[in-house]
Image (tube, rainbow, N blue to C red; front, side, top):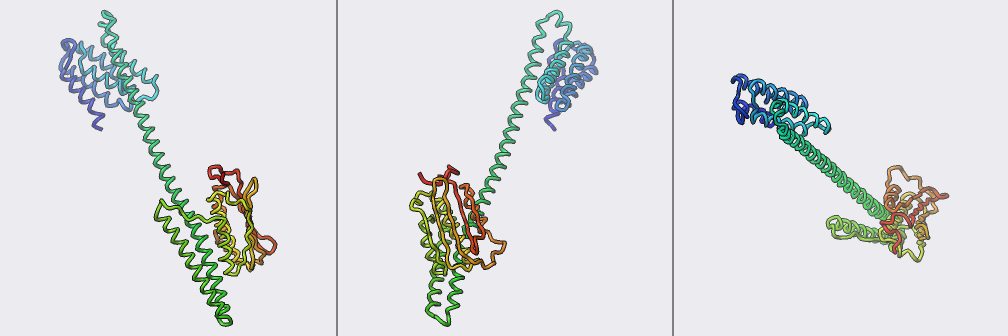
Length: 375
């Protein structure tokens, strides 16, 4: 790199020009050229081999004094560059101190006679060598801090990217769950109503017309729910429509028209439930009853919601029998568990006699950030 060779060329030029000689040059021009090379070329190694550079420069200083009887400004610059590189590129400070001591020994050795006559002159090379090594150590520390900051920024950028991806994935899961609960429920109800209308088409045309009207009403309700979801997606300021325990009666009425009589039993104090939890419980009831219509021959189902001192309990039961078409590709039970994950709730689902039961438990003391039961 050009920056590596710039001090080399500068020291070579200044040394060859003999700028700043302390006294007249006693050697030949060839001696001057040789000492200029001895001072400048080791600086090319200062980044990779700082200690080697210090040793070569110490020898060069003594040689320059022996051949020409004088040091010059190029010698001073070479020592400063080497001392700074020693502090900058050696990791451990004792090693960089050793490098500075080698340079100092070369400078003092080159001026041994003067140092004997004037001992106080040794303080000047001690000062500038120590200052150059110290500045290199400071630059090294600042460079390391800059590298650490860059690494931290890169880690934060990766974390932000990961967080964004997780947020997107979480939102996709939430939307898939909502669509599954809403669309699957409505389509199941409409299919059952259509089947009932088809069965009564010839013998009871009026019943068939009633079934068609129920299908129209269910379809309009479904379109309304889907449009509400779309509005929420388009506007981040709009809160999603909140369904809760009070809406179970409406759900029971809709399913009653589809041929499933639903009995709702609930405690009187359920109004204290957190709206978010109440909405999740409503969706779980909706999903469970939709599964009853799809997979059971039951004509009745029971829903019980209670709020005790330690847990909120939800039960959805049907007497069966099962139609044996449960399959393995559904997402209903898994979606119920996902809905309750933030509330530390559990879902137990399985056969109960000839029928099927879903039991949900949500501890009232869990996940305080969500305030499961309003205060």
